Image (cartoon, rainbow, N blue to C red; front, side):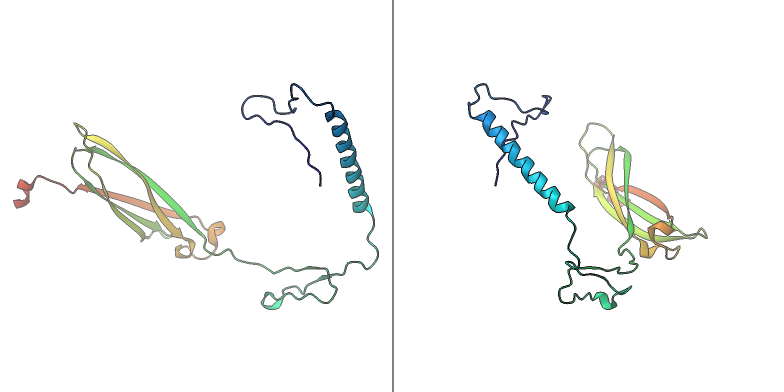
Length: 196
């Protein structure tokens, strides 16, 4: 086993293409470096010779599988080194889309929580809309001195491809059309209004 020092590596704007030399290098270093280089060269030549040498006849048994191995069973015979098998066509499972929505609540009064509901429908090729998701959540009250806009980030919908109304075909075969609708209202109000 050989250990080769690759020099210092600097993180930053300094040039790392050349290793830095120590201020006081030992007198043994040049001889050591040249002997290491010679050993590496000898190893490289040996490896190349082995790669280019022809395999003796019959040293490796190679066979092909039947076109589609039954039940995916693959058997190696005695002394058989290598086998190539084609497993046929395979459909990708679990296809679907992920839709992230964002919105901004405008002019929200201070000290009032907001209930938000988002519904998502998918439109089929005939223009009919069918539901495919609903989310409801509470947006916390803000405490600014006046009305403020509140951004709402990442309302996520998971849309499996097997629920697509346009039929089979997977993601490569189908485009999809969705319609999102939002409603929002205050949760908190003045208790004196409770009798209204």
